[in-house]
Amino acid sequence: MNIHDLEKSFQDKIDREIKIEPKDWMPEAYRKTNLRQISQHAHSEIVGMLPEGNWISRAPSLKRKAILIAKVQDEAGHGLYLYSAAETLGTSRDQMIEDLHSGKAKYSSIFNYPTLTWADMGAVGWLVDGAAILNQVMLCRTSYGPYARAMVRICKEESFHQRQGFETLLVLSKGTAEQRAMCQDAINRWWWPSLMMFGPKDSESTNSDQSMKWKIKRKTNDELRQQFVDMIAEQIKLLDMTLPDPDLKWNEERKHYDFGEINWEEFWNVVKGNGPCNKQRLAARNKAHDEGAWVRAAALAYAQKRADRKKVKVA
Ligand code: FAQ
Image (cartoon, rainbow, N blue to C red; front, side):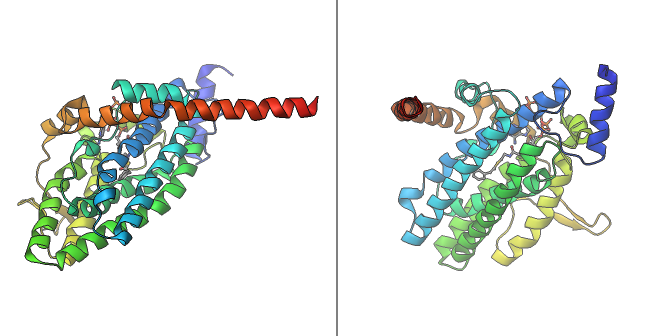
């Protein structure tokens, strides 16, 4: 088959909802786009452990601490499934990690904001995991098989994360005036950055058109962002709190909430590495990697020893 026929039969498979598997022929650009997105997603899960990890030792009760530890561990697991899925596209985990640590690879803008109070743990669960889940439910049907399968399990865990975040805020919202103020302040700080998680608006999104044709993405950035606004604008009523947007208003004609303009300058500034915590996050990842070198060396030496023993037995 010539390249034109290969491309045609590839697109035909996608149109018929047949998953693309690692050994199947695929256009180089499809491989690269998936690799970019899956590795960025994996990095986001791993860097995303840092803002919450910050509160494990300061959680207000044993129950809250146990929940938070479990959640942060889940994020580590998500990172590992996603790195494994990305490796099927022909790169190594070492290479991906090097790209993250050198600042070459992107990860979600959201994790470059600080977690200042305990209420931030609730806001991160409710808003950040809430935004992540909307995007990820779609990815369970993405066209690349290993990515779609990894997302199924990840989504199950994320829905627990979101609920625990909402419950944390619900408790604070029913508490003292100080606790209510802390809850509102966290919502105010996390609202706009959460909307930015969905990426630039469709007119500025360089990858969307092609990713939609290849069914890597099933909904555009703006479609998912609108879905998120509609969901949260209703849920906030249960908390008896407000969202920091004077333009947020139900639009009867569109059957959606209208909302204010996102500060795109802030978004690109964070993506380019100049957000409030970018440098701190990369420094923390590099430090953890350097300090863990002996663990990796020991694990490799142990694996080698076991392999050698097996060889002797066989001989
Ligand atoms: N931050 O053309 P598009 C989580 C970049 S997981 C930084 O629209 P695309 C779980 C984009 O890479 C959160 N960069 O891009 C958790 C591209 O640059 P490039 C992560 C961003 O890929 C919770 C350029 O802008 N989730 O939260 C961002 O078609 C709590 C142009 O954009 C995923 O990664 C951003 N927000 O659409 C963990 C989901 N947005 O690479 C711990 C999978 C865009 O061309 C605690 N990813 N950029 O140089 C996706 O669905 C997509 O990649 C989008 C972006 C929708 C994020």
